[in-house]
Amino acid sequence: MRRNLKNILSLLALLLTTSYVSNAQSQQNDSTLYLPQGWSMFGYVSTEQIDVLSAFTEIATEIEIVKDGLGLAYIPDWGFNAIGDFQFARGYQVKMINEVEGFQFSSVISNPLNTDGSIASLEASLITLQEEMMIANELEMYNHMYQDEQISSLQNEMMNNNEM
Image (cartoon, rainbow, N blue to C red; front, side, top):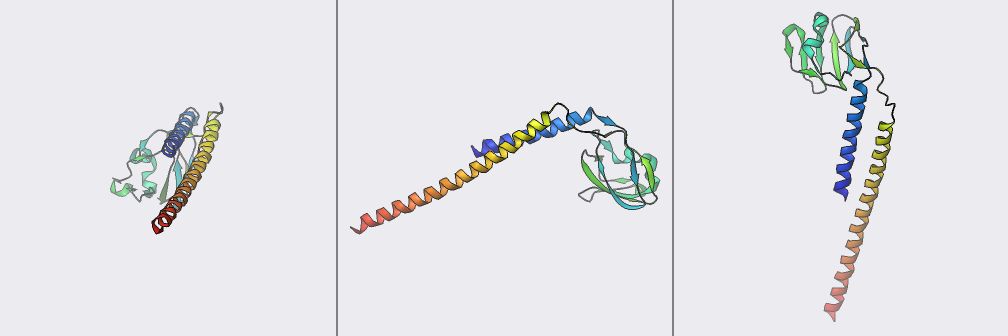
């Protein structure tokens, strides 16, 4: 039962994410990004994957380095790109040689709110399943404790019978 609940919980989380992304794709528009001189961070919120080299072509001369969460880097001066493609909903660090205002990727999510309520419904189901899993874990722990007590009682009974 516990394994089934975990599988259902994982499936619901996947459905929630998929619903969020597909809804977000229908609500994309162009937004600009401010990149100050020195270190800063940004989140890539376009659902379209794009190669880092291609994404920064127009401002490559202003970038010293871009790093992802694993430390993989894009260094324009060397033509080096270990990041590959930008990934949806991931954060990146960037060190700019000069400030850049008004930069934009092809498209980004502007308002990922779900208007038909399906995400809210999935979230409620997810919370309910989490609560059910906690109850199932508590029941499992109680059953183990109860079994230990029964085993102890049987062992004591057997010892008493052997003494006679």
